[in-house]
Amino acid sequence: MAYRTLEEIQLRKAQLREAIDRENERIATTWSSLSARKESSTRGEYVANLVSYAVTAFDALMAVRKLKRNYGGFMGLLGRNGKSRKR
Image (cartoon, rainbow, N blue to C red; front, side, top):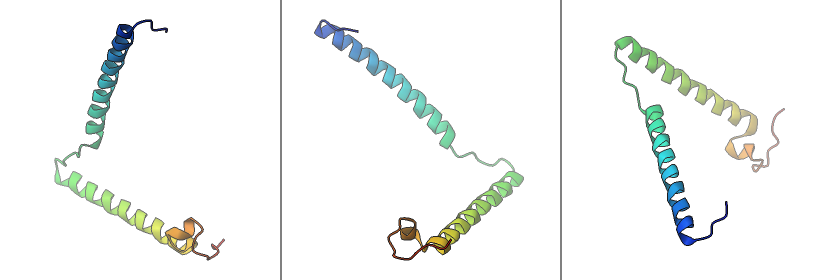
């Protein structure tokens, strides 16, 4: 689209700004609904969430342990510690 006047450019800029603002509002709404912490309504849900968090933490711990053992730590992943990795 060819713009011939400054007013056309300003009008198009205003239209784009409105579209961007609408998209930002939609993204903010979606993000807040995704990141909102859901409260457990029953004791069973509370225990299930607690177990889920514990399993996730244990899994992360085991992954870090495995990486450390196989690569000699974080710097070993980048190949900067001088050790050759185990195969």
